[in-house]
Length: 103
Image (cartoon, rainbow, N blue to C red; front, side):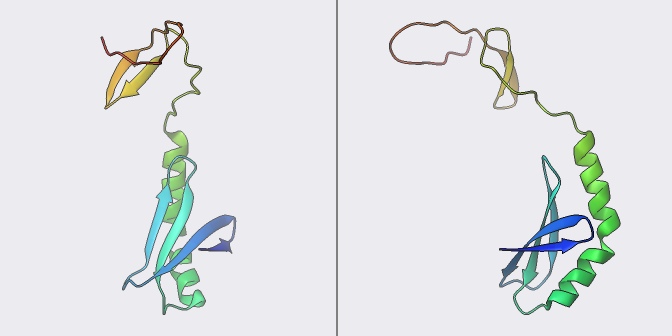
């Protein structure tokens, strides 16, 4: 994987045995990854990314506006998600083996 800098956008470039160029903006920080055909020139890749800068910035702004889960301290009363459902944590300290029960 190589790094490209286009303006203020840092791009991770991955050359693969594919036919088309793909641009991804990944959560949570809006990192930009580009998968490009092995035979595509650096100039062609740069031009393709430059033509999509408005879309990239829009995706990064959308990701920045999404609410993020706060850092967890693993204390009683915190809410945690498990398989898409929200559960309230009740910590019971004891010696021996750790376990998790859903009640």
